[in-house]
Length: 83
Image 1: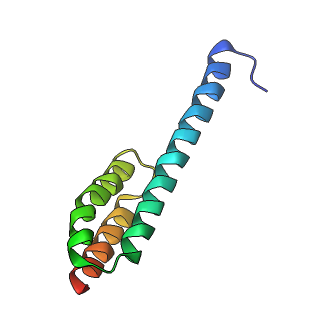
Image 2: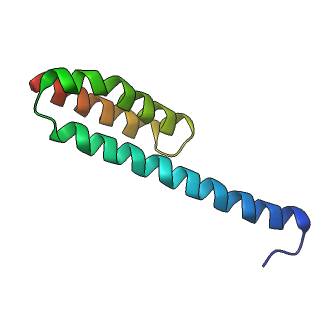
């Protein structure tokens, strides 16, 4: 275990960040799953901008890789256009 005050603070802050990142990632994954289950094109087109925004935020904060974000956005756009 860490002995320095700054190291102890880093442990606490890392845990908070880990939980926040986990929550945001899981929320985005659930939104993507819900979008894939939609069958109406209008509903999907309404939801896709907010989901793309969520994916961009994850990539910006390095929760997911930027290439993964691009692949997700591409697949979702393809899915919505095929409805």
